[in-house]
Length: 423
Ligand code: LLP
Image (cartoon, rainbow, N blue to C red; front, side, top):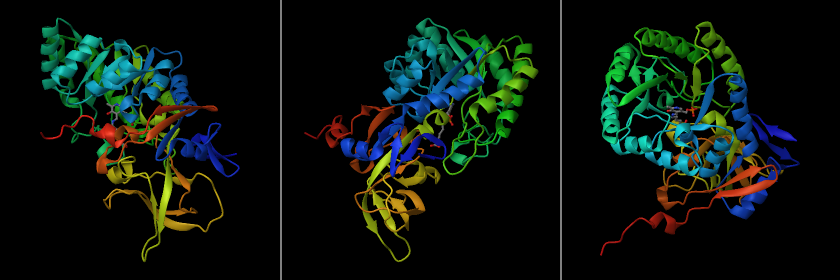
């Protein structure tokens, strides 16, 4: 067996790439391509590292479901004891549909609408992670009108550089997220005064795909300073929510393991005397990113003067991360053979030069072969679009030798369902 780096349950057996005990070429033949394939064992293993990290603590892991919100994926995490971090009314409905209870849900995001707040209050969610003073006022009004009290945490912006791509860095002064560290105390005072609110905690989230522990340590230190100040002002904080952000291996990165990172952070939290609080986290990518691949068929090989193109049937609508963040996803053959290796730009059929999946990749492939785009479990299907009226891909979850189709391929008719023709 020949396991792929960072993907413990994806390995070549003989020359064929398997996910757990299932051959990917067989899945591609049965369900067609592009096809997202997920390994349940990978998800549970990734979750297990966090659970070990928090063993013996009062803690709750809220899966940041924006990373992958397919219902069956949510079920895996709900059944394993996770709650959910949501950022929209749509995610709230999905979490409930997957079996979560209101008390398992926390609501993040800078732009919650009144209707979303009302629905979340009715569902009895555990906490609103509030991001501005204006939002506090509106939430209090909505809660009073509904005859309820909204549990709130303030998302504070610790002004720490997570050293990641600027589009996924969220904890710096110039970002739209969170309440500035310097204003946090006065905002807590206001929250404590408002009639519809009950302050329960504090949260932060500094960015995504963070691959070193330094930024976490800096952020934790700053946020704990604030916890001290807020509590001195007579406002008790029952929970501390450390956000998500831990990175994965796309291309040789070596992020700290979740349990090792948390051993280090918990030591500091204990030293500062906050180890007895309810500790929360909101991981997304690190739970699902390397649990999924996108299997795609090679349609054409197109040799060129300057470059060779490998045109596959997955595109930027299925895999938006390269176009949006110049992100790297490894591309590997599903069945290895001895065709001549060439260097290709792997691209999709969408009519944009930005529709690329990988640049300058050595591959031995022939038309009709399948390739697997690795690390496609997070922020791929959940960010997929219908651009070029391409249907969203099908999804399959593998559990040992069992295969579950968890999303049927979307048809053109599905896409037109809500449209109305002119009379
Ligand atoms: N909590 C909050 C408040 C967040 O905004 C996010 C992600 C998370 C938790 C989960 O972060 P994670 O553990 O997944 O890093 N589409 C981008 C990533 C955007 C992340 C947005 N916020 C990408 O594909 O790289």
